[in-house]
Image (cartoon, rainbow, N blue to C red; front, side, top):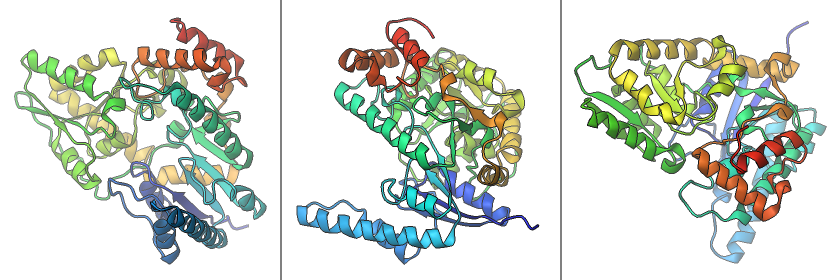
Length: 428
């Protein structure tokens, strides 16, 4: 019996070059793959497929000002997406949807199921994480509309329930999976295939001891990425007499980011991340650059992932950020060692072909037991993009305004109790 050759659809958006890399991986495996991006990424990752239908659907999605214009183009948008759905359904048998996207606001999912398609949903953070724990949506140090936060949580929970009703496979991580009611595949076991379009050889271009150490920070959202804490850490090192230079890039195209990755010595990604190797860090790894990234999920990942699956970044708690950067700045050999190990990790475990192969396995066989995460076992409380005290205040404000049920965690009473205690100042 010949093995079934899947025809893959990727869409309908791009996240930090993830789907460009995944498409490359499927191509390397000889799979038939199409990637449709209806929301062109401001950082210009590229490699998505275009035809007349895609261009028409993208054009119809543009915001219109007049009432007549909005009504007309909304109808045109629906028609274009229906045609795109029909085209994709005829061509593909596996649909990998990014970031909670769909053709027709999830009304297409029962159609795809009726047609016998395999549906995989890949979550990326703000599409599944509780909004009251998401600093990219409700930034720290800014006034928060609590009612808006409660409404956003209710809508997100409802959306995830809809997706779970039809999806064959869900891919996420425990720190972002609070609203799930079904088990999902651990994203850190699947991997991130974010590979730069031109990968440099693993040459040693790092500055030796005694020369200025270039530290690169590229925040897509400075408040949520903890840019203030990162600047403070670098300022502390300068006050200590260390020769360091902080290079900040925000809102720049990916091409410019890649040029700076080739020139820097250390990448300082973010201060409040809930996993140890996000998209920018993966790109840095392909350049053999050491990455410092801070967050509150350090122990979670050490306990839940075997060392062979744990990305070898310098992942630390926010209060350890300055010390981690200091270690790398003062030790050129350590920088080289961390960079080499990161490069080896993404070249092997997280190469585009390796990650694409795991998606093919998920499509054919479902989620292996060793990859599965039970949402009822989640105990992580700190969220992403928020200092601990800000997270506590957000959770407390939701409970005070809407009651504990406003957390949308009533299906997980133990987790609900942990959050209530966390809001009151207790620990998990």
